[in-house]
Structures are given as C-alpha cells and as structure tokens.
Image 1 (cartoon, rainbow, N blue to C red):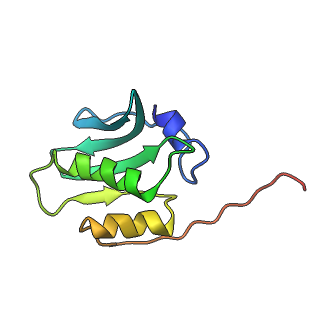
Image 2: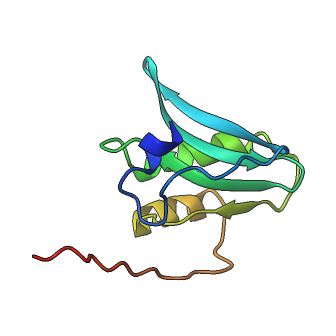
Length: 113
C-alpha cells in the first residue's frame, strides 16, 4: 500500500525499514484502503502520509493525519511530510500543525526531451 500511495510523489521511492516502535494508520474508503502513514506512539511522530494516485486531495491527507494524531497522547506531536502541495500543507495547518522546517525540493528530469 505504501508503494502505491507514494507512486509519483517527490521524495517517496519505497518504504524504508520499519522501526519496532512504529505502527501504521490507514485511510479506508468504501471497500478499500486509500491511504497510509507511519506512526511512532512513543515519541509522538507521524511520518510519510500517502494517498493513492487519483485520490490525492488535501481533505484525504488531512483525514489520514487526523486519524493518526488521534492515536497519540503526546502534545505537541511531529508530522514529517514531503512532496505535498501547498493546499495539503494548508490543510495540515488547519489541523493545528505549524511548520518548523521547510526545505523546498528540486528535481531534475534527466530524460531527453
């Protein structure tokens, strides 16, 4: 599911090794899983929210992150994300998250046109 949810998103290539203290939270719609993110409840960390291509809306990302946040007792908590649109970042801010570090990314397409 992670590979499908990361497909085509800058910064996501494939899932890394899972830490023994992390769990996964998913977003389920209709009859299928459409999103997933990693959650470490010991340190209050949410990472890598991803949604299936064609379903990537700020609302879906926000619902996924809100679901993960509901599993955490720690405040404040950390959300680590990359490759998100400005609209998705704004949706995270509407949930109460604020940027602590923003690093714009650049990607070079090496294929000849």
